Amino acid sequence: MEENQSMALKPQTMTQGPIGRQIIIFSLPLLGSSLIQQLYNTVDLIFVGRFLNPSAAAAVGAGSLLVFCALGIFIGLSVGTGVVTARYLGAGDYERVNKTIHTAMAMSIYGGAVFTLLGIGLAPLLLKLLNTPQEIMAQATLYIRIYFCGFMAMSSYNMGAGILRALGDSKSPMIYQLIGGLGNVGANFLFIPILGWGVGGSAVATLCSQTVAALLVFLHLVRGNRYYRLRLKGLSIAREYGGRILAVGIPAGIQGVVVTLSNLLVQSHINTLSINSIAAFTAYFRVELFIYLPILAISQTAGIFAGHNIGAGKLNRVRKGTRVCLAIGVITAVSLSGSVLLMGEHLFALFTNSKAVVAIGLELAKVTFPFYFIYVFLEIFASVVRGAGKAIPPMIIILVTLCGLRLILVNVFMHLWPSATSVAVVYPLTWLTAALALGGYYFLGKWGKQEG
Image (cartoon, rainbow, N blue to C red; front, side, top):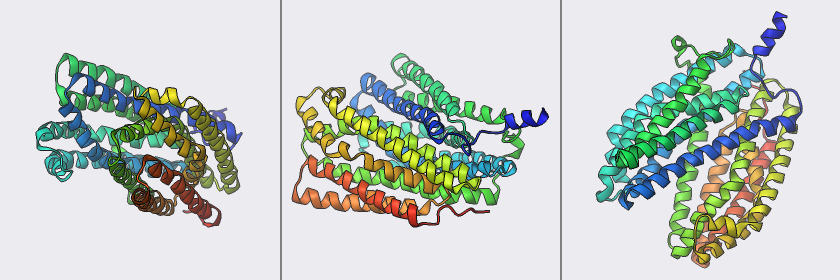
């Protein structure tokens, strides 16, 4: 009887049972979390755009890249934490799971505090380096400084969410983020149109909502069962576990930041086209989310699944799970791509009332969406290899293909045939190159080797 109760308390892994069902059930809350995150961004844009002047919106935009780059490092660390936690959990080594959790949360708190001080102190200098116009410098500085006051909460939420997902719980982070998102809507309404706090009000709203989500995750861990309960007195950075987290997290963080920066360079080429083409790409990237986010959720699940089963020494189950994830991902990508193409005119019309912009957007979609299933392979192969603790190979491959090669092709194509279609063609070409390289590493590499 006591043994059964003890087993019931143990965190759930994906080392046994029907793979397809586990992948789908685990992926859905991850998709929900991504959609809620988009809600955060959209709500901020709506309130700033509708209730404030264009300079305020520009001030928010000027600092967004800076914030994302800083937060990207901690998002990468949360990936590293999830990988390490999942492998120890799969191996049934609950003592190491516990030590990893305490190290990760200590890193998020101490690291978040350091980034808060740096962000507040260096905001004017960093904004100046980004060529922020002088007329919006004061508002942008205010926005960034308030935003960084909540950086510890943001880093703690991401780290805690990564831990919970690695422990087999993808629902709780989604629920906590939803509560924070609803709070964000209410706080924006209070601080901007009612209290008139302007740009600062938008930043304070984000600070409050992220703090609520972080506290909920923190309380969940503190009140967790004895296998992973977070104890305040145990918060410290153990070198062994911190090193393992950094080994996966730093490459993942660098990858995310560099890919974002490379996309900005691609955007600089797009900005040389007509106004309609620029608007069409803006709408295209939003419509693309309908396909991208479900694929992202499946690939994140593939990484956790790989971590659990490699930790348990079940490499054949990892390979089977990879095939299942690829099948689910391809079916999802083909179904959604086809649906989006069929309803493309109506979807693009959600983001623009210009028929010319809609027409260009549809042309872009026709070039890329039929090949979106290729993207499934690069995402899932990268996640599985990363889930095995090998973060550097996928980082190098993705940086070379989706950053380096993409920039080269955009420069060449735009020089020879300057048009929106020339930019669009580059995307499936680089997806294919990355998928082939990652697939080659997956089938030929020693990524499944168990570590101590």
